[in-house]
Amino acid sequence: MTDLSVSLSGIRLDNPVIPASGTFGFGYEFSEYYDINVLGSISFKGTTRSARFGNPTPRIAEIPSGLINSVGLQNPGVESVINDELPRLAKCFHKPLIANIGGFSVEDYVYCAKLLDRVEQVGILEINISCPNVHGGGMSFGTSAGAAAQVTRAVKEAVKKPVYIKLTPNVTDITEIARAVEDAGADGISMINTLLGMRINLKTKKPVIANKMGGMSGPCVFPLALRMVYQVYEAVKIPIIGMGGVSSAEDVIEMMLAGASAVQVGAANLVNPRACLDIIRDLPQVMKKYGINNLSDITGGAHNG
Picture (cartoon, rainbow, N blue to C red):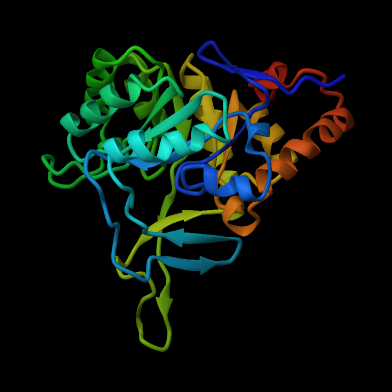
């Protein structure tokens, strides 16, 4: 008998498969395709203090084995998410959620985190520090160990629920940022966010995306994500939610062997709305193939010996 259950900061998940923020809406949209209660959890759409329309179009570009997006955190704002979106999700999903929070100042993060901390459905707060710091010259919070720690510390002081910091891969040494947020009190880490990329239209000779550049995701980034999870696992003692190009049960196991305690699936949902369901259904068979009885036992297994 295979056991797919895992634990994140004392919260038991039936399995480690979690749709990644920005690829699964607020969750209820996917309930038309399958019973979303099979999921371990859901990281719902990145939520900000105020409503955001997002970036100008076009904001999606296809690439071999992936895509580039510059959606720009389009969302109705934290109050509307709490009052309108989460009650709709509660009708079809009955497990603890991961609340993904974006911000453009430390105060923004704290404001949203305080409100979402009070929501019973929310189990974990996931802080997206890839957003530009409007008070720090527009540089992403996640590219500076000091800024990342500042956000982490401020959010931790304001909330009771576990705080996971979502790291950007667009840095020289991701382990430095990981150590900084751990030292500042983070309960866990989510990684990686998207890599910066672009495409140019040969006919117009201009960038395909209106914002010129965007976040690259999909199977093409999986080896990079895997390497970074492996490195961060050796650098910190807090749990990691691994993501970046995960699209199969084999990818889930590989990511967990590298050091992830759970795994998020992103771009695959945009290709196949049932991607997470397919992965969960395939996991027992793949575990059996590789002699794995308890999935939680394999986290960091690639580091042994």
